[in-house]
Every structure is written in C-alpha cells, then in structure tokens.
Length: 124
Image 1 (cartoon, helix red, strand yellow):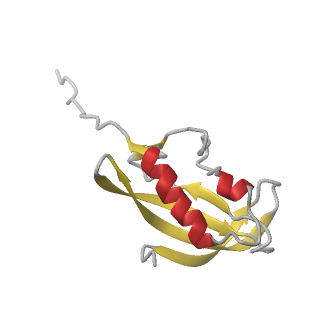
Image 2 (image 1 turned 90 degrees about the horizontal axis):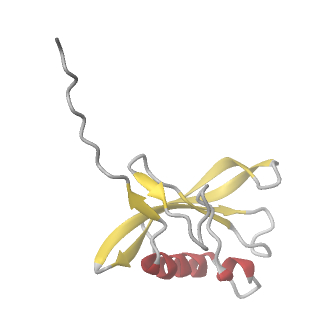
C-alpha cells in the first residue's frame, strides 16, 4: 500500500541499550500540510514479540531537515502516539502508519533547514 516503505533487517539499539537484529520498515510516508504533499522519512522497528508489543517509530530527517519537537516527536526523532501507547491485539502496522499520516499532517515533525548562502571571503 505504501510503495515507499521497504523492509530491512537492521541492528538496532533498543531504549534499554540492548542491540538486536530487527525488521525495520524504512522509507517515506505522504502527508498533506496546508494543501501541499510532503514525504516524511520514517522508520518503524518491529520488535521480536510483535504483534503483542507496539513497534518503535522514528522520523529520520535528511541533512536538509530538522526535527520539530512536539508532544508526538522527541529531539531524537522518536514518535509517541496514543495509538502506540494503547497498543492491543486490534492494533497493526498499517494503523500506525495511518495515524502518523493524520497526526503529522496537523503537526509536521520535520521542517526544512533555512537555506544559507555562502558569501565569498574577502581576499587581499
């Protein structure tokens, strides 16, 4: 359904500090903000005990982007949503993605860094 998300096996460091090989969905999801569509880079870590446990979700800014900290995204890019904190047997990865699209459409988690123009140095 989301053609820009791909599955990988990656070594991830969990919040507990333990490193694990996890299935990671990585790519972009489309959001609509002020009538414009933006592709937000994300990753979703699927834990070993999925689907009993909620995945860990992140926004992954490119070098031209900065994280906008909010109630839903911390300074490291970790995503916090009621859907994740209330995860149960009816929850699934598609639901997480759909909720991120809705929430991020209201409050984008990333913004473009201001473009800086380099001025040539004075040579004497």
